[in-house]
Image (tube, rainbow, N blue to C red; front, side, top):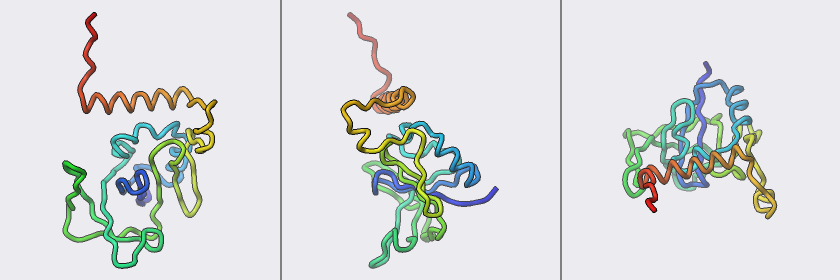
Length: 164
């Protein structure tokens, strides 16, 4: 199987990740375009994507920008307070042909392969989302409800029965 990495930007600089999918690039396109929603990746980040996922931190040199040339990066571990600790001493170089992904909500998540932007099956424009008559697809609504429930349960435990 071909080896490649996907740089995942989570919500415009919130966190960055590298993902080595366990599928070919063509399979990645099909997987992404059939994804009904990005809800499962909203609270925890893309840690459950199929393949190997690592959080990273970029190292920029003076004047270097992500869009002008691939920066170097380190794999990191996130600890309390959103502090990250590098897992190795020497930065790695992002390959020139890295696939890019932005992931946050259904209206702003996308995948870029060879300068072509792909949207997932549950993608909606911000205009559609902001329309007062807009309703999410039932599958997307259910996935967002589950993602919220799972996150709240992780943080606060199982809901207690209401005794009346």
